[in-house]
Image (cartoon, rainbow, N blue to C red; front, top):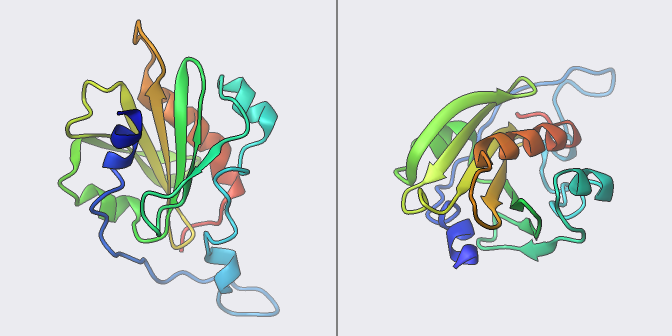
Length: 173
């Protein structure tokens, strides 16, 4: 059931790809695809074992790919479990337009456009997504409370983890 809940927000994704942005350097006047691409980001290695342990998560993670454009990694832990996903078809702005969310609150992660959200049907699942723009898409951090008494603020935990991931991924385009 946890896998179904964790994948719920990732289904029905729309094909959106932001464009624009430049980076000036002596060699080029526009960013290269590798500088803006999430292709090099591996959700199972973006956080170190020490970082994972600091959140109560166990290493290694298990690769998860509910959709081809949303490869991710699942981590078991206590008090939360984690799914870390790179979404190459959506941004925070396009995700906000989906009718998937029971709640969607805009915020920032280390200065990047971000949001926390809870999917419809998962409001009792003790699950929250934090997402932020990266490269030509976004990174999605889903925290799910592992066990009762369900006293963890999942959105706060997802945001803490997102703040650790953010410096390790490409700037949004």
